[in-house]
Amino acid sequence: MRQISKITLILFLMLTIFIVGCSNSVSNGSDSEGEIKIGVIQPFSGPNAQAGEETFKGNELAVDEINANGGLLGKKVKLIKADATNAQEAISEAERLISKEKVDIITGTYLSGVAFPATQIANKHNVLYWETNALAPNITQQGFKNVIRIGQNSDTFASVAVDSIKNVVAPALGKSVKDLKIVIIHEQSIYGTSIGEMEEERLKDLGAQVLKRIPYDPAAADLSSVVNLSKNENPDIWLRTGYVNDGSLLLKQARDIGWKPPVIIGVADDSTYLLDALGKDGMEGILSISYPPYDVSEDYAPGIEAMMKSYKEKYGSDPKIPQTLVSFGGTKILFDLIKNAESTNADKIRESALKMDVEIGGTYPTGYGVKLDPGTLDNTRAYPVLTQWQDGKIRTIYPSEAVGTDAKIKLPLQGW
Picture 1 (cartoon, rainbow, N blue to C red):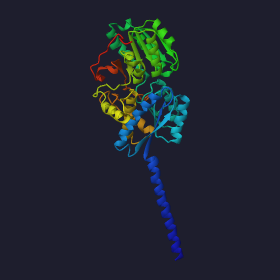
Picture 2: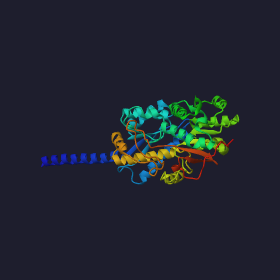
Picture 3: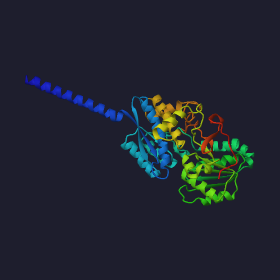
Picture 4: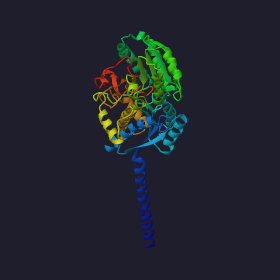
C-alpha cells in the first residue's frame, strides 16, 4: 500500500512538473516566440532627430497595417527604437538590439554614416539588416550576405540628377547640355561625396562644363564661403547634395547676398522643414532629386493615398518628408519577403529576395519595383524623381509615368 502511495506521489510530481513546464513554455512563447522584433536605428536625437522620427513613422505605419491584418507568420510585429547619431552610437545600439533586445531584423536609416557601422555589427551576428533609406555605396559593398538595400542608392540619385539636367532642365533653359555651366556642392561625408563625384563624372561625359565641385561641413555655422565660391563662377546650375539644416543655411545665405542662379537643384530638398525655414517664396522654383513624394500617380504608386490618410489619422498632420513613404514602402516589401520565406532568417530572406522580380510602378506605394543585384544586394529598380517647389508644394516633374498632376517645370528660377 505504501509502495502504491510512493508511485502515486512520483506520478503526481511528474505531472506537476509537466504542467508547469507547459505553462512556462506558453508564457515564453507569447513574450518572445509570439513576436517578430524589428530594431529601428535612426537619429532620434541631435540635428537630424526630426528626420529620423519621421522616417521611423513609415515603419510604424507599416507595422500598424500588418498587425491589424493578423501579423506575420501568426505573430505580431514589434518595433524597438535605437537612437544613433554617429558611428560609435550605431555600433553600441546595434549590439544592444541584437544581444539584449533579441531582435530578429534591423532596419534603418536616415544617415548613411550610421547605417554603415551598424551593418558590420549585424553581419557579425548574421542578423538581417534591411536598408530602406541610406544612400552611400559602401553600405552594400562590404561583401555581406545579410545586408539588403531595398531603397535607392547614390548611383540612382546621381543618374536621375544627370538625366533630369539633360532631358528636362537644359530644354527648359533653351540650351544644350554642352552649353551648361554647373557648380556642384555637397556635404563631405560618403553620402554627399559619392553623389557629387558621380554627378561630376557623368556630366563631364555629356560635355557639360563642371566649373567646381565643393565639399563642405554640414555642421558648419557659416557656409558663406561656399556660397561666394559658387557665385563667383556664375553657373547656370547650382547642384547640391546635403541635409535639411545645411540646405536651409546655404539657401538663406545665397538669398541674403542677392545671388539667384537660374537653376538650383538639391538632392532630397523636398522637406517641409525647408519650407518652414525659408517660406513659400524662398523655396519657389527650386528643383530637387527626390525620394518619391506624395503627389505621384496612384497608378504608379498604388497605396500612397491610403498611406497619407493613415498618417494623418495617426499623427494629426500631412507627412513632412518623403523618407517616411520610402520607409513605409520598404517595410511592406520586407513583410512580403518574410511571408514568402516563412522565416525571419537572414539567409532565407536573401534567397527569397533574389527571386523577387517586380517591375517599376504599379505594385508598391513608392513606385519601386524589386530586382536585386546578386553581387551587392542593392535594389536595381528603386529610383528617385525630379520635383520642383511650386506655390508652396512639391510637384513631381519627371519621369512622366510618375507624374500625378499637371505640373510643368518653371525655369529660370523666379523666387527670392
